[in-house]
Amino acid sequence: MKHVFSQHCLSLAHHYRHRSPRCRGRYFLAAILTLGFISPGWSDDDDWRRLHEDVQAGKIKPLNEILASLNTRYDGQVIDVDLEDENGVIIYEIELLGPQGQVVEFDVNAATGELIGIEGSNIRGMTRP
Image (cartoon, rainbow, N blue to C red; front, side):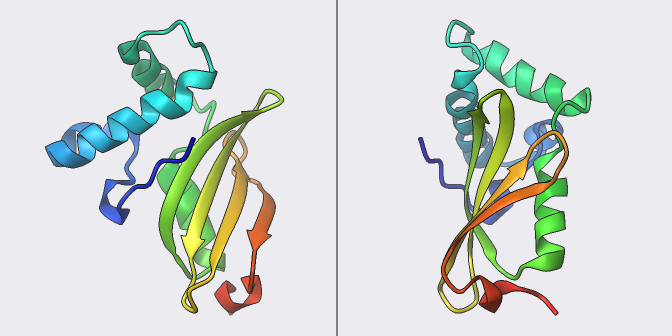
């Protein structure tokens, strides 16, 4: 399931209350939908609470840290972010739009922040010197 965010809506759970109602709603919905894989029986409030708790407990890195790390190495604008469970490993799947119009997906281990995969075309065109 894919969720598209505008750049200013990509915020951490603890910044949730400081965003516009439109952004809060978009992020809240995305958090519920993307975290549904953890426990389908949870209520919406439990999903949001779990995301917040996992970030606060250091189980997963905050999205802004992951994006800042990518930004030091790659030039692009965020066009999509997903949180996926791949065999028990939580992965941020982040799509960036590069300066030449290329779309590249970066897979980042949410717990460690390690870049574990890159897929797309003209990746070198996004690499920062």
